[in-house]
Length: 154
Image (cartoon, rainbow, N blue to C red; front, side):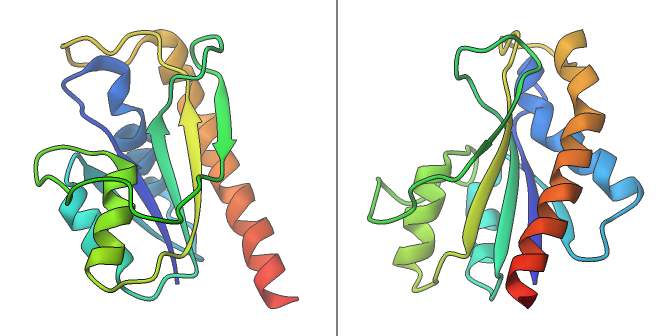
């Protein structure tokens, strides 16, 4: 089973990117995956990752120094503890991964589809550059699902 997790905070501008990607994918869900908007519910994501998933693709706002709206595919290092238990009202992926281990779960392969933000200050709504990246991010996730599922079947 594959999980696509949209994460972020809609009340902080471009930080809502992952939530909007999940919304876009939910309009025509990929047959190969469950798409869920986790928002900032880190514990919910940690518990979900304790179920048997072969892959989790996370859509999130990621600052890496590129132009706003730039998409990245990142395979994070998920080995070893990274911090405290997950907070029910905040989202930090390293802490989510640690929480899964503390709960006795085994993490699936994790891929992050990140988008360079333009602004993450308090306020509702994505910047134009990040909004334009939503369809491309949804398409990229669909492509990643096809490639990853093809690897699993060979």
